[in-house]
Image (cartoon, rainbow, N blue to C red; front, top):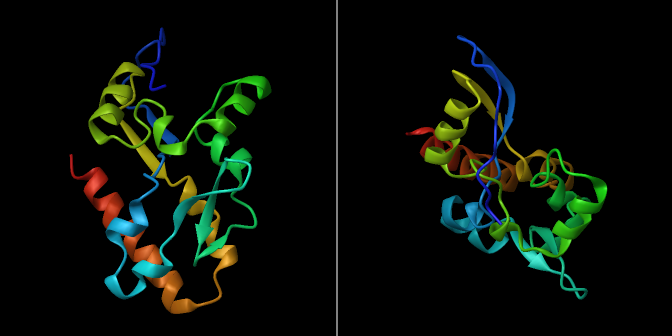
Length: 153
């Protein structure tokens, strides 16, 4: 499902992508969270209908359903095309450059971009579902550790 994008854009010097979302790997929090919070790590769970849903602190997310998980992987697609991604596992359908730093650099070069401000995708919504400040800080630290590794290239 990871397709190399086709581009025919004009190359300009000094152009910056001001809204470059990355797709965090589904196991980010399991790998990067402080050990004492590992049993409460954000992860991808499977609903009875077989579709994925984000799990936050051991509970299904109120907001990050299969439909919302598909949006971050389907920019520029029609609603019909997006719907087909709800049944595709998240980690199997991340777009080119979505969570691989070397691919991201290739993508920036292909699109004639010098830099990108990167923003999370999965990490945009969990804050509204966490009341425990220590857990929220652990989630933030885990994301920050991962994004530092992502940007190290």
